[in-house]
Length: 281
Image 1 (cartoon, rainbow, N blue to C red):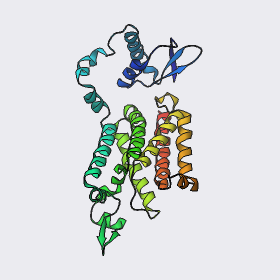
Image 2: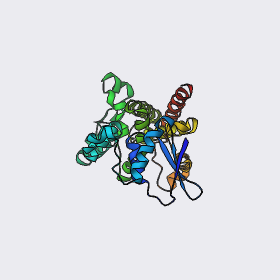
Image 3: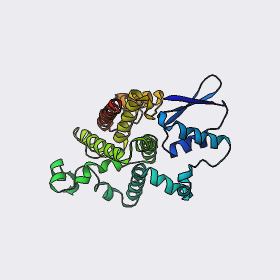
């Protein structure tokens, strides 16, 4: 990160920050010595940043001249255009949750990692080979979109939105989609390897995004990625806590711990790979 300028300590920078992210200008604002310091990740974007700051200070609309006409579209459409993969991850999860509410278990069994049926009045579980031989390949990823309660859904999608936006804005939708597929599939396979069939949630992907964003921010500080260290400590601490017997005593025993760990490993690997490429260039 490179310091650009100091702003008044009590200035409301919310609109400025939104505009900077809108134009994919990686930045950070820190509080130092009775002032807010504005930093830019890429020195090549310094002039564009200063132009937006000047407009913000004068109370003008925060639009770049060449993009002013495109900003007439509704805010939701604008977000969809800029972050299609992030929006799709959230939207599909919400739609699946709604369909579970309508169709119940009939819809859940269509998305589990292996086929599930009823034999002699009892549940009969298929195997991973059944999934592959019947070409139901979507089952390898679909458990990531299964959520079994509002808190489960909101908690995961909150972090998908927080981390996913950074990855898509700074590295593009293809990178985020790759992370979703690879982390989702490997996290599901890690959980299935423990003998569990009925599981779901985006948390494996969330931990992959956490690992990816954290390593990018640490190894390439000028990349524009940012995650508070206390958030990293909290999420890693939570993962370790849910692996202990104490979690079961307070009602958190049914957690896909192996999916969390598998996703985190994927994110650390991709974060190391992309940061190494950035450092070489």
